[in-house]
Amino acid sequence: MEELDAVVVGAGPNGLAAALVLAGAGLSVQVFEGADEPGGGCRTADLTLEGFHHDVCSSAHPLALASPFFRELGLEGRGVRLLQPDVPFAHPLGGERAVAAFRGVEETANGLGGNDARAYRRTFEPLVASHEAIARAVLSSYRSIPPTPARVARFAALGVRSARTLARRFEAPEARALLAGVAAHAMRPLDRSVTGGVALLLGSLAHAVGWPVVEGGSSALVRAMLTALRAKDCDVVAGHRVRSLAELPPARATLLDVSPRQLVALAGDRLPDHYRRRLRAFRYGPGVCKVDWALDGPVPWSSPVCRAAGTLHLGGAFEEVAGAEADVAAGRHPVHPYVLTVQAGVVDPSRAPAGKHTLWTYCHVPAGSDRDMSAAIAAQIERFAPGFGDLVLARSVRTAREMERENPNYLGGSIDGGVQDLRQTFARPVLRWDPYLTPLPGVYLCSSSTPPGPGVHGRCGELAARSALRRVFGIRHRGGGPGNRGILHEATR
Image (cartoon, one colour):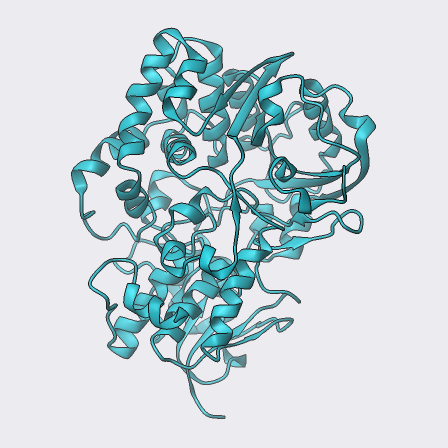
């Protein structure tokens, strides 16, 4: 068999991004995907009833808009429409009482009022003004000084703090709840470091770029990447699960969009003992129980602002959300879980038949849980939207254990590629100057278990591919600017 330049294992957004960068450099590339369809967690399927299109995992996409990789790829020019809800996210508190993040900082602050309005402006206005520099620093390998360090310094100083510490800036339950809802995306107790940084990053992106959904479903992002790869004669083989590196065709470089545990299984005794031990010590986060709903109409939220929101965080006041996340970290299933909800139908009627709606939900659970949390999730929705149960036509439930069976990257049902704490932000998956490079010649890790971590942004794949281009092929990125501009232009021309 003629040797390929590169082989990529895993066709999630990071694996496809790696293949795009490599193929754009003029290399011969082949991609293998174990599932029958490429995309990993960035897929859309009729999980409940025919004509109801549900996002399998990722749904709202602020990081896709903030990502240097996707900006360079040019999603709009490839037919991908990112639809912006009037309200990026909202947090109901009972009855008609709710708090919301609007596209503008000022409008959001005005909804808080008093001292909290001033505190919100002081916190978020500088971050929004510097959002491009912050996004480039956060979506990086963390191995170089940002081009504009002064713009990133404020975010870094605040971002290492816990959400509980940041919440002290606010007096009223509304502002504190708004912060809790977005901080809980970190999937960690809210008194832990870096949870504040997750809240600040995602909250500022709501104002800077929005929290869009993809028209027709998240699969459109993957289709655009596959079209770009086909234009470079890159072959993507789905339904081919690789169980050993020895099964792969000869190639100068191998990039793996897999978890550290899978890397150990694929490489076997080829890995040095010290590296294998460090990979086995890598920590994974809690799991999720995901429930998708087919509805006979829109969710009847008691609060009008919630009816316009694309994403909702359900869980009540700050202490309630914090208590639920602490339960999960302690290995308990919360009685009243924090529930993350996306209602794409507020801007995308194509997701369901006329007059019908889909609802995307999940809650956090202990890793490896096989408990069906749909009743607890439904109770939280009903708490803020009485009559919800009467609208349910069908539901699809996947426990944390089933999430892992469907996607082996989701160890224990963890969808974040590994715990997001200060240590595993910089030592992801192990502490090395080049975090993508493994001790095996020409073998690189490019999953969300490498920097910059979880999210649909493609940067783990892009940065790993850039490392392989430099080390294996002697190719540095061209075009005079960051983001591998020259290579991506070639890949998508």
